[in-house]
Image (cartoon, rainbow, N blue to C red; front, top):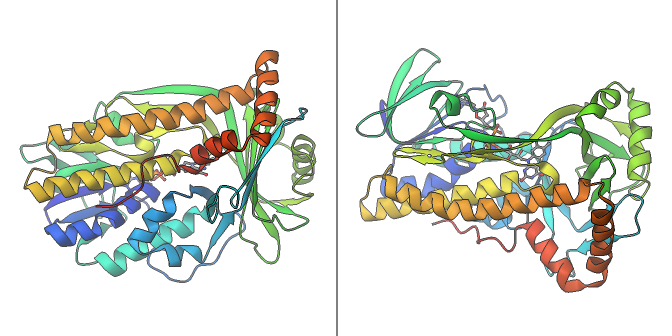
Length: 414
Ligand SMILES: Cc1cc2nc3c(=O)[nH]c(=O)nc-3n(C[C@H](O)[C@H](O)[C@H](O)COP(=O)(O)OP(=O)(O)OC[C@H]3O[C@@H](n4cnc5c(N)ncnc54)[C@H](O)[C@@H]3O)c2cc1C
């Protein structure tokens, strides 16, 4: 470990590790010294053996994210445990409207991909270890407990293995939605609770999922079902079931059998019969946005900057575009001999990011509100909308492109 770095990333989660991978070629090209600090011990990191576990959490990657991993050179490795989404079925319970999106019609190989978070993290960290051991110091487990601005950037205090201070010209806070550093640094944020919880679990179906993802809007909230990798011959799907706050307790207290029965009643049988549910977890849903995303020598990235409703599966995909934008800014500053923590350069980066964030947040926030509203006019409107989308290819393509992140700026790394 050095005492001075050009760049220090706080948090080796999906976003911090993605940024470290994206910066590897720049570190080599411009001789940048980089540290990645992660608080949790990561036993799987760097191991090529992967044992899928029934209860692993998953993320839907937009089709556009594929170009990012291809440029990193890890797409082939990642593909070993990816499930392609060939079709998306969107419907509204109790209404006739439904729309079906199809990869073939949209002329893409897949509408998106489902990856287990643990596998994605393992591949990213393995890449850093294999390709960047001479370029990036992976400091783990160690927690950043404090940061103070100084003349050259920030002085960062680590808690483990023993208290240490290191300097960095630019600090990237990718320490997640519950960022303690955000509070410590006095970075304000807005929080808009949706009055809902997401119950997340894996399910087994009595038949193959045929690579179909479902989004089912019900009177109590949307239910998403993502196709997953089979484990021990079971056809597995990832469930995100959104429920109002006051209905959570009644559902979490159900036995597995009663839970499956209730879910089946809400979701119907279009995916088959639910025959098993794994460990259930629940999260309060809220839209959280940091009021400041840059300061001189400091960037806030990923969930620490914005946590979205998971309905449209956009949070990580949006963060990845932030990773690419930041890498562009770092390349430009390095090329021109400018300071990495230069406020004007960071503000220009932030300005571009805010536009994309605004669009993406509007898309998931409005979709959520439209489809959870019990207002009869809105219900009528969305039924008509789904029917219209199903018969109108161009409307469907617009929706599919937004959901897949295809109409967003291309994820081209510098
Ligand atoms: C139910 C649900 C479903 C979702 N589904 C999707 C989806 O399908 N598609 C999608 O795009 N997005 C999805 N998301 C969003 C996605 O999960 C997040 O965008 C993503 O996990 C954010 O990653 P992150 O690295 O910013 O934060 P985290 O994953 O929280 O990582 C932060 C890391 O920082 C470390 N850390 C924290 N503090 C410190 C410190 N002081 N020092 C050192 N290390 C520290 C932590 O240990 C952790 O490893 C979903 C979210 C939820 C809740």
